[in-house]
Length: 142
Image (cartoon, rainbow, N blue to C red; front, side, top):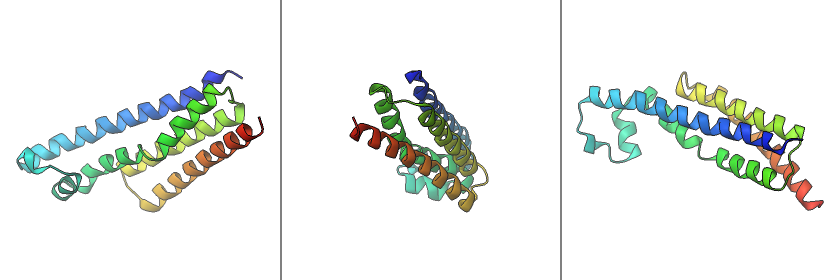
């Protein structure tokens, strides 16, 4: 198997993070201008959340989520790549993790339906834990 295939869903996650970052600022900057509050008022995330509508803050909250479990995903993909442990099942599972994170981000940045968001998060997390378990078993058996 081509070991580099595991890097594609990892790059996809990086692209998703960049897209959410741009969406966050595309909503935040106009909302801040409309609010007509001095910029220095937005000194912390809590103050920003208080001053701006929830729909404006949703992408910022999603961006934070993209630096939680995906960080483990990045490390795991690099581990699999470096140790030449990539197989078809792991590549498929990595793409599943990415797909669930895309759906999670879409829901959180739009309708923000909490239970749907949770199910998408949980499905992605299970894919990640499956990948981790496979990597651990493979590394212990060598």
